Amino acid sequence: MRNKLDHVDFSILNILAENAQTPYTDVAKKLIVSPGTVHMRMRKMKEMGLITGATLSLDYAKMGWKMTIFLGIFLSEISLFKKVMQRLNDIEEVVKIHHVTGKYDVFIKMHARDSFHYKQVYQDEILSISGIRGIESFISIEENLERHIQFVATEEN
Image (tube, rainbow, N blue to C red; front, side):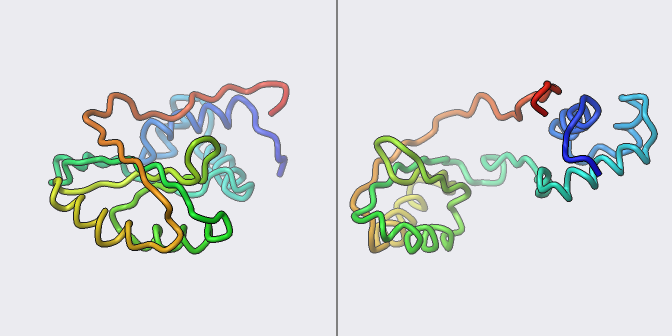
């Protein structure tokens, strides 16, 4: 199979990025191709490592998790990076971890049920991690956009 993507591949990705549960037959109808083509293209993109899974979009607030918090973390020593990442990964409320450039060494996203829950996780779990020199917290008051990039085929693809 080719390792290049074309407009059909990108169109499939765009449709499934909107709703990963869209049946391949519906994708095929929208693109005027056979369901087998969609299936083969998806298999190719999975084998390429381009598609690594599918997720659900959840409204945490409706499930009682009313706070979204971002933390900018400063490490005391960069050599402790892997150890700190593993400890952060073990905290269930942490949903994203980014190794970043700029002011912080690590930027994370976490959810909490309320301010008391956040305080407990922050003080008892995050602040107890050896290797963290400092933290700046940012509480999200509203998320206004969550989307994927719309892909188009180019000469480089």
